[in-house]
Image 1 (tube, one colour):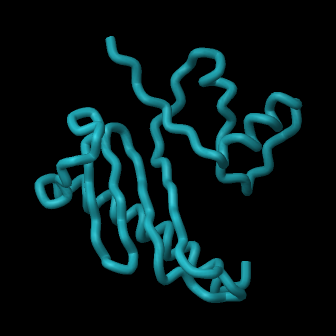
Image 2 (cartoon, rainbow, N blue to C red; image 1 turned 135 degrees about the horizontal axis):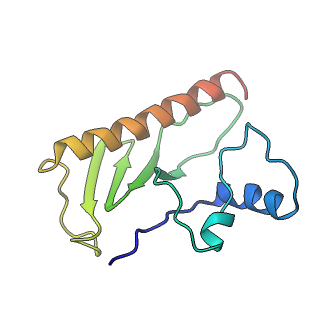
Length: 131
């Protein structure tokens, strides 16, 4: 039986350390504790997001250029904001990310792109408010 891939992110490190120190994790923290994974258990599946913002982030300047990537299960979507271009890969079938299947699998591509655009929109709203 093939074991599921557990995607983790840097935001998972602080909640893990806090749990190890027996300190309550603040509700506003985005990450999750990796203690269950360290004990051999599976973590519930979730999106993993990465972004590379281009240009200098200054006081209340919204994100206008950058590259975003989201992983969900076997899929990875890369979105180039400036070019409005999306690449979708099935990592199980194409681990070297050679065949862009964005148009062939429009349902998966659209769902992952919506997730990226929603996260991007929320970030720009927070920037606009000076958060």
